[in-house]
Image 1 (cartoon, rainbow, N blue to C red):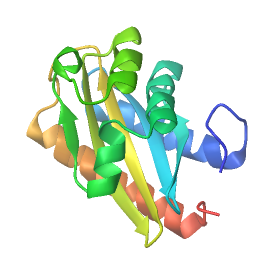
Image 2: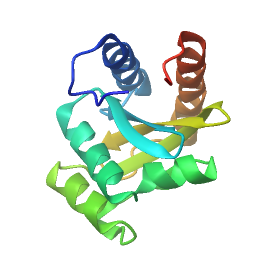
Image 3: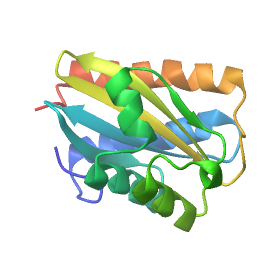
Length: 153
């Protein structure tokens, strides 16, 4: 699987999911997708370049909210990026990109593959419970699409 900055049908397909997620949220949000396949992380799609940069920082450092969500198979919410101290490389990328909040929501594709949808906002804590539940359902759709289209090779 190649990163979303490469032009290929898989990344274009997943970029469409990232853009659709951003449109569904209802508050200004940028979205990106990280895929873990056989313990390898890859930033595979994004609705914007600055969200992709944040995810690439996670992939390169091996730590961040998305990585935790994938590892623990549970959502990870960062209401205020400036108050977050756990992941310095990711925090620096998110701050430089102008983001103040993030949420990472995982979806299980198969035994070896997990995907995470990452929400980024310039506002502090912009997503209510209903939005996060709706986005959790959406990431399950993304996982199903990856599984049925065989995009984990």
